Length: 182
Image (cartoon, helix red, strand yellow):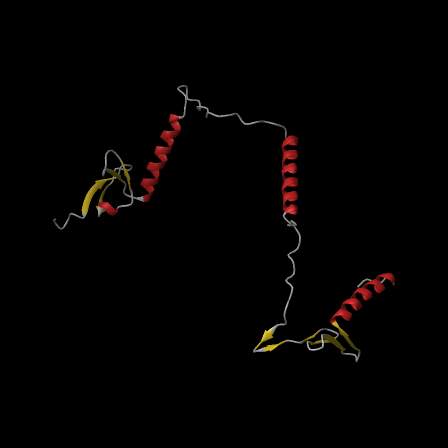
């Protein structure tokens, strides 16, 4: 092995430029040709792509008839119809899609469900049992299952969680009967 076995002189198959190929087995701008282990070398990426484009054009030319007109592809002819038929078909497909979504329990366009909090928030080993709102504080007594409301104006309410459910339902009904929107 001489010191120049890693270096070979080549001529670009596209532009004809003479160039040196360092380590021919690692050269990336080449394509197989002829027999096993024979390659066509290119001086650059640009020439490699130009060769690929020429090969594609040759393949496309092979698809032409002798008179120069494009050869037709085998297979069934596409079905033609009116725009109205096409739009109707798309509407039917969309209706089927949304119906199947409904069958799976999915509502397209429905807002994401709000995640339900199932246990109190915790931090530093302690659990939150109260929240301050804009008109007062809410405090939960887990031992007695009671929620207290302490209004900033001095108003207080204290009910069990079941009584709060009944209170909320009755409040909505009473407001509706009085014509008040909550």
